Length: 204
Ligand SMILES: C[S@@+](CC[C@H](N)C(=O)[O-])C[C@H]1O[C@@H](n2cnc3c(N)ncnc32)[C@H](O)[C@@H]1O
Image 1 (cartoon, rainbow, N blue to C red):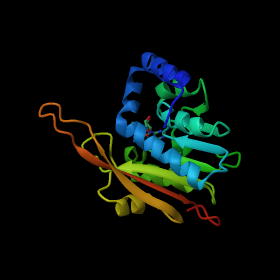
Image 2: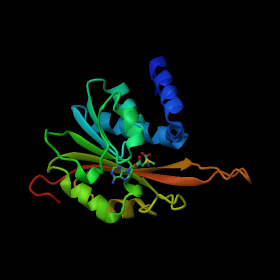
Image 3: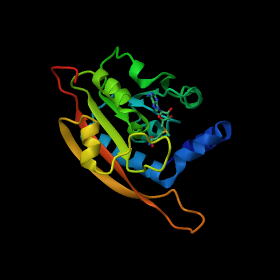
């Protein structure tokens, strides 16, 4: 995928203002976001309003917007630091995703931070999604990162704990990193992704 000169300059400005944003640019991070944007293009070509929960510094929002300039993207993250960056460009909310109130019709919700949430937090977020809404979720099998409280070993486990129904597609990719710099040995992890939609007739 190709990014514009303006987009690269904007991202570098983001890193200057928020040094932690550099972590959103590991190859695995960028590659998994491009992978997701390809599924949005294939499965939801008409999607207008897209909400990204656990949006972090909005790199996924920028990637989707590059492919789909007409998309209306909303960013939600409980951490006010990344939201101070995303709100310059997108409608943004510094709230826990469980507290998001759906007012207008939404085409699709995205959550690539499923491994960062407890089961209760995820279930509350998931049950709040309006019936019929498409969802795209990602997670991984990286249990070493202390923030990863809900990593899974397999794609099947990933779909089970994330309450997936009405699955359109579900796959994983393998990626390198973070590196063991002492022995210079790369580690390999799996990133899981599933697209589906909520049942129409009830909340769960
Ligand atoms: C490290 S980042 C992104 C990691 C993810 N694997 C990715 O590649 O997009 C995780 C983000 O999820 C956010 N987050 C975690 N739990 C949340 C919640 N309950 N509501 C809103 N944001 C949440 C964190 O604040 C953080 O910005």
